[in-house]
Image 1 (cartoon, protein in one colour):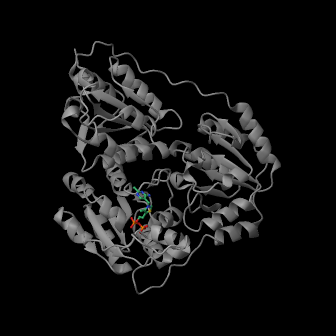
Image 2: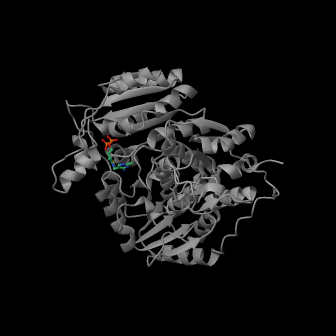
Image 3: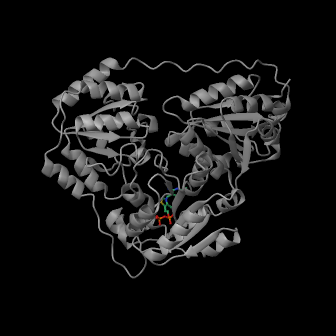
Length: 526
Ligand SMILES: Cc1ncc(C[n+]2csc(CCOP(=O)(O)OP(=O)(O)O)c2C)c(N)n1
């Protein structure tokens, strides 16, 4: 008879979980050991936050909820930011933490926190294992993947973990069937047929499987399209109808101008969680989606169901293409072009991104962290295939970029992986270099060094404040990487950048590249 920890681990393995990320405490060791015996590989991270970011990315890339594990108390609270990130980035994930043994819960106050309350406010649900360990795990896995996908928390008290599990290993629960959306899709087709200048807006629920259907719809409609950062690559950025990246990236004013030029926005899996502005509330929006776009009073005409089949149905029901007037389309496409700044203080971030893109294989996976560099990457990093760009854009939590790259490399060992991070984000996540070295992951990290939390610097100045608490003297990241056993270089010219990335790609080694940049360009772009 297995104990509860073993029953949980076996169920997770049966559901396709292969990796667990985390940092243990005494109260969770039984579960981690059960994972080992169920052939779920446990990877030790330097901080539980990283474990959650990694689990999120594994879930997002594989469709099987990623697993992160922490102890109770401080381990659980350290997980919270990553769990909240998966919640607002709509990524399926399972967070398992310990909890105080049931027998002493009333008397033991050391490290006792209301984990159910903490986690239920940033996840799709928080459950405590009592008796039905297998049922809880299966229910949590299903819930994590139900649209919108997200994180689910399971608390496992250390006495229950080792207590004998008496339940049955029943079959996984079935997901509820989707509502019938056919008539709403017809209604949406009527709106599209009646409008003059539709704009397709592709968002995070357009997962890679939707790619052929999205692309077919664009060809049928011949209308311009925007993607959000989390949908980059679903339609290729080099398509002549590509009109830019929507929702709060660099040069956002131009994107909003494009949105205003349309008389109908056709959302495809568009989730406003990616937007830091509310333009969508004042536009004519119809949408195909896997879940309601938003709660409350804002209710555009939405067809909810299986995205692929709804896209096929809509494309079929469109009478005629709806191209925009050529001059208008040309003007909107020209508005998103920018020339890099010439500077002697450091490289232009835009130029650096162009060069990294040119040297990095088109199907490689790029991640980025949060800051000014994210807004520029989001808008100007060109993507040609789905699943090749990873960014935190719902919570926009600093720290995402490096753990995301680690997880991407684990999921796709054959692909080159590049992480673009700011010096602030690098400082926050230095500990992740240990796991990169330990696993010899050939991740390339490029640190945009501007000695500042530059997005906050720009924001403070725009709000009329003197930038304060934003500039700092970063350490020598190249030497730090070497201390971790990772090859590194500081590059001050585009040629040197290219040479370093080419070498790292050819040798397939972990590499950190520190590049001094001139943040003044950000004032124009973000
Ligand atoms: C965990 C977290 N803390 C704070 C913030 C607010 N924030 C957003 S961008 C940013 C600056 C990031 O600085 P850096 O990594 O150097 O990137 P840069 O802006 O210079 O490109 C900060 C502090 C955040 N988004 N997440």
